[in-house]
Image 1 (cartoon, rainbow over the protein chains, first blue to last red):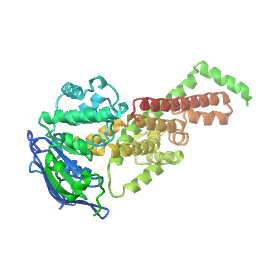
Image 2 (tube, each protein chain N blue to C red; image 1 turned 180 degrees about the vertical axis):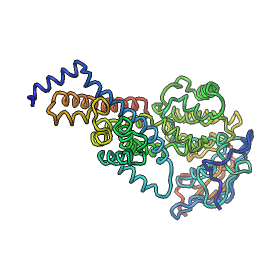
Image 3 (cartoon, each protein chain N blue to C red; image 1 turned 120 degrees about the horizontal axis):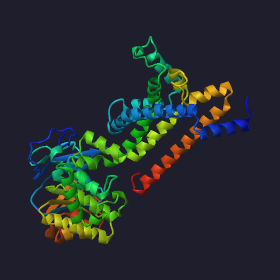
Image 4 (cartoon, each protein chain N blue to C red; image 1 turned 30 degrees about the vertical axis):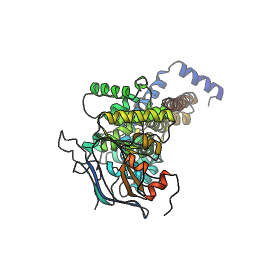
Length: 254
Length: 235
């Protein structure tokens, strides 16, 4: 069964219904070059707060995010946004920020405005300006996006993802390449978004960051979910061997 | 046969004095080649962009064909256009043969593959970078093509300048379909060929200098574009 793709020419969903939560995944399976990258993963993204997906490199975290957004189609299993297949019309309700931001060759303001598909140009410019101000980038609005520093670029990518007011924001190791100050600025923006009611899924392998931000933890190892727990429970007393080994910084060989 | 030094002197006098015969030839050359590049951009840029973003069976063969067409011999293009436009040809009733229109068609056929092939490479590279991000933002296929064309604008302008360089310097195609008719279809390259064979080296040299100057201007423009693009990290 093939499913959960976001075909470029999918028919637009009924107007006014942009809801995507809960995002449910059922029995996801993905193989590449004979290796099982995602192995029978089922999960539900819903409610409020920050869900953290943790796991070692190569566990399948980034691939899982791509499956949830419809960028990738699973070999088996299905993804549903609020009970229906992912479609292009609801894409603005699902924000995704990559580890390495992909910015258009335009000004910072134009980058954010580009993400706003609805409304007059003046209206979109105004909203883009507000999104930049929230990210502390108002003074850089006219700068070409790609000459900004790494931290500013990631803040801009986050501002662009948040500008359409998505219901859920998925973050793929957003601070992996940043210095501590820049990472702190990103974390502040993530907390602000949570406070405004945006559901957040954060992929990270930074234990300290997961402790600072996470409300619940999903631990992934070898393409499988091995543990799912409230943040406190996971960090104090991980139930799985893999989780314990990861937190202790041991290499897990099985 | 004039001597060399005198020919140069006469050439500069013609250029400096904006000799009407010389100016007429230069302006027709520019008109024909600029129009051909404009038409080539209208066809070649979208064609290159679509090839850059799509995957289909036989795409590799299309790319080989396109890259081969970049090196089309102008005389062959001239011959084919001549056959199409001649009285006995399918487009004969248009009566375009030996007009600037015929020259524009021939040069467009030469330049379209250049613009399309260079655009295809540029757009394909940028598409690899942008694809997931644009899909996440809910951009459809045509929106993606438009976005890529705009964001690649500096590289695409460079491709158009390369096409202009080829068009304005080409002699075989315009000679065959234009006929090098004085005051009607005589352009710089065909005039140089004719005047040289007649021994009128001053006019030939003057036009040659203009062509050289154009080459310099085009290359300077390409470098300028690259510098501008790099300054704002557009490259």
